[in-house]
Length: 137
Image (cartoon, rainbow, N blue to C red; front, side, top):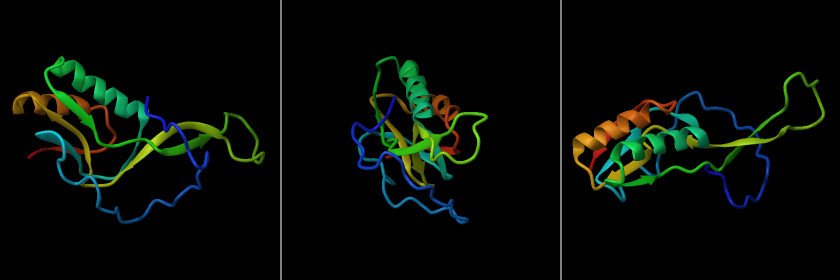
């Protein structure tokens, strides 16, 4: 799954979630493929969810097209074990997440028809915790 090869800081500070969702300023246009899956709300997406969506798309197109994953998990999430008392420091890094804002392109695809791309993205969208929409170049 998607994890950074090298990190400057193993554990990050927890950031407050803003009351008003910020709109994406990067990854907002289609760069590689002909069709894309765009997020319409903000959320954290785990590496497992990205991999599940990628597999669903790849299985549907059956080597018929090229798929680009435009998001990467670079933020670590730490967890402490269950039934552990307070204190004792911050927990170990459990998994990595990608912070997604509204308007960000999540996946792109090329080399398939529009109906196939729509179906592949529909299958992928079921695996993701954000509402998405289909866009074309």
